[in-house]
Length: 184
Image 1 (spheres, helix red, strand yellow):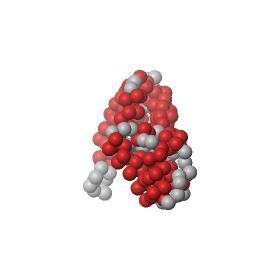
Image 2 (cartoon, rainbow, N blue to C red; image 1 turned 60 degrees about the vertical axis):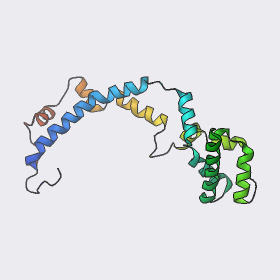
Image 3 (tube, rainbow, N blue to C red; image 1 turned 180 degrees about the vertical axis):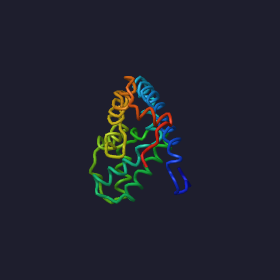
């Protein structure tokens, strides 16, 4: 209701509410279909993993891991990570396939001391699966949270269950058809 004068807002509520109810009616049908589609969808995990590795999508997590595990600045960690990414691109290999000796040499040259993390720690830091686990916090959407959300949608919202059972209140029907005005 952008730029609606402050006179009598009730004059425009009826049309807006009817349109809003129509949108929710469509969502009642669309969201369960989307949920079913997503649950039945199959992915090629090998292909996805390969593309993630080639894209260097986990390179920032490597830098974050170096900051946490090695207590170095993000700037130094980013410099190390960018050199590793450049080397992987030049060799046309996956980030996880880089030799640990290369990482150790770059780290020692940048920081001035040997790295404390192991080869396994390095592989874990660039792993897409590990990256997803680390992102399980408010504001992020890893697999488990999406599954829970889809289950809730599939189970239906209370209003959806009422409509699916053919039960609607008289005031709901009046508001949708525009025969009832909201209280002022």
